[in-house]
Image (cartoon, rainbow, N blue to C red):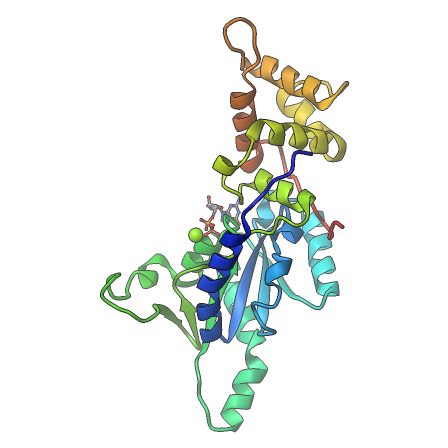
Amino acid sequence: MQPIQWFPGHMTKALRMMEENVKLCDGFIYVLDARAPFACFNYKLGNLLNGKPTLYLINKSDAVTERDVGLIVSALKAEGKRVLATVGTNAKSGKAVYNSVIDMFKEKIERNLSKGVNKTMRVMVCGIPNTGKSTVINTLCGKKQAMTGDKAGVTKGKQWIKLSGLELLDTPGTMPPSFENQIYAHHLAYIGSINDGALDIQSLALDFIEELSVVYPNALTDRYGVDLSGAPIDVYERICKARGFMLRGGEYDYERCAKCLFDDFRKQRLGKICLETKPIN
Ligand SMILES: Nc1nc2c(ncn2[C@@H]2O[C@H](COP(=O)(O)OP(=O)(O)O)[C@@H](O)[C@H]2O)c(=O)[nH]1
Ligand SMILES: [Mg+2]
């Protein structure tokens, strides 16, 4: 496996940016990608949310099977987490998220009321890139409401979207992905949560082919009509050939093939693929 690296300075900067907003919030909606949910945690930033109530969304649940969603929900619930499987663009999911968030604050709101305090709970949607945070914000509140704030640059304070009984920060809390666990780092690269520009896409494709050949062998054979014998590079070259990704002189166009492979995976053209139904050590 070709290691994926990241600079610690990025982590520190992202952390500093989030810390200020975290302080203003009573709780969080933490968006995970159902295709690699455990990779979506940044264990180094574990303390960031500081024990405040958090609802974990297993978003993009349409991209994996119901059975896998069930396994992920069970694994996270076993860790004592509040979990909900969602499809970010789905209005029904939006309603379910809203209800779960209200439920999450029930005790706190009652405690406040008994002291004569009527305080609106403030929530931030957070998670690593590309998990669907913006989509969830839009579904939760409707685009119209999200845009009703004052113009950027005019207002200095944070923009909050008012929902019934809640206020939602209108900007997502983007957390840096973690690179400690290289299996997770690879999964994040596959699902598109790590900027492709920072990656060696050809060696990534090779690693992806190797993993898929074991866990979802039919995904590659069904889509590209290739057999999986030999080494991952043999399969890679067979896909190049099957797709016509060849350069003049009979060379393989590995780059184009890699892009096509990840595009197919990310758009679910390889079928429903879940890379993690439980934590990987
Ligand atoms: N299949 C699927 N795609 C989704 C879902 N939620 C969001 N997306 C897509 O995932 C991509 C990233 O979403 P975005 O909200 O921009 O992610 P953010 O970077 O976390 O804000 C977009 O192409 C969305 O349309 C979902 O539940 N299912
Ligand atoms: Mg976004």
